[in-house]
Image (cartoon, rainbow, N blue to C red; front, side, top):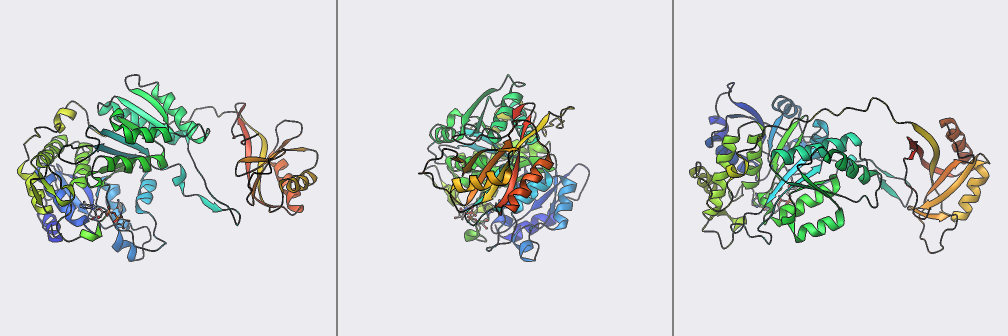
Amino acid sequence: MPNSALEQFIENQPEKKHAYTPITVVPGDGIGPEIVASVLSVMVAAGASITSEMTEMGEKVYLSGNTSGIPEETWASLRHTRVMLKAPITTPQGGGYKSLNVTMRKTLGLYANVRPCRAYAPYIKTRHPKMDVVIIRENEEDLYAGIEHQETPEVVQCLKLITRPGCERIVRYAFEYARQQGRKRITCMTKDNIMKLTDGLFHRVFDEIGAEYPDIEQQHQIVDFGMANFVDKPEQYDVVLLPNLYGDILSDIAAQMTGSVGLGGSVNIGDGGAIFEAIHGSAPDIAGKGIANPSGLLLAAVELLHHIGQSEAAERMHNAWLRTLEDGIHTGDMKSEASKKIVGTAEFTSAIIDRLGQKPQNLSSHSAASAKMNRSPLQLPTITRPSTKPLKELVGVDVFVEWLNSPDALASTLLAAAGEKWKLVMISNRGVKVWPNGHDETFCTDHWRCRFQPSNGGVITHDDINRLMQAITIAKIDFIKTEHLCNFNGKAGYSLSQGQ
Ligand code: NAD
């Protein structure tokens, strides 16, 4: 469908009236305008009462010098509508451009990414015909906080941040979502056998909040086993809940497993609004050819209509799209033995519109699955902090230093500098204890963690740490950073080193 289809749509769209819900629309780059025109036409034909506020975002904006790719007018529209239908955008080559998706997620607090991944066999070829899974990914925290440093010539680090309020929000969202959508089971995946504090917190909050939802089956799997099992037997899963990085990976794997990434829709949702998009990119290789498949964005639009309370239009649209698949009218990327006619974007759009009001005959009908459910936006309770803070005691400090000599030489220099008040508990390199009683075989970089605790085993002050750091500076040891060792209500809030 040429770009002019979008222009025509804009010209013909209804005047703004109360009954119409305004939505912010980003036509995006590449095939974006073509699939947006298609999806908006189907939405309106299906009876959606919407007016579209067309906004800019993406390549053109980046290239105009705005490194975030999002102009102020787009923010203003989104603040007003709180709902965005977003086509894919092209990220220009070369550095310096911020990820537009990360900026929007963080600015608006869109803490949940929801990706339904469903197979449409036999109409779309897949090895997993029974797959019908929703991946819920925490969207703001974890290694995506973007806090990275080069600490020494040899070592860089990325901070993994997991917060209790962040875990509480996403876990509660997942349980509420499962309840609302009639889903039976949630599988939480973490690596808390290794990351006991960070992933451990995510898992603990899953168990704590899960106790309030006895109607939903719950299980936890270590993420490596969990993902391996998932790709083998996806039909064993219903809703999968993951922290940011694992969720990023599994949601792409799951979309691929359904048979076509081109069919995937995705929702970023939180207190500040919701963004609905296809998961594929702007496909510059086929832009302007009129052959793009609008299905991913169409399925995202179905979710958008549910979100704004227009479930009837959502169901009509989804059922007509399913029926089009069943009738074998497919775009080129969907081609299989089930295809009867390969069509371009415009003809595919017309085929869906022609089938509005019909239901699929074999694929499960949208209404059968969701008619009983209340699909209004989830209202989650505000996160409240406990009225009493836990007792926090400072019991030591990890001093990170750059050093090129042996661990024994580092230990004797530190012991001489620190004095009797301090006990040098251990030195580790890349998390492995190398002093005392290290192993000669352990490979060491130039980045060392030196753990100090008071000799008397008691509590220390910030001044004590300042004095220790002064002594280390005088001894000409290049310290990089410190991490305080604290007990919270008597429980250690830090990891022990391997071998400690
Ligand atoms: P892509 O998803 O755009 O394309 C990969 C392949 O799939 C191409 O062959 C393309 O023709 C095909 N394809 C994708 N969507 C299709 C559709 N709807 N119908 C038919 N065929 C389709 O991935 P890419 O080429 O790696 O990325 C292109 C650009 O998109 C890059 O600038 C990238 O940064 C951007 N991107 C944007 C988003 C987003 O805005 N959410 C997501 C991913 C990639």
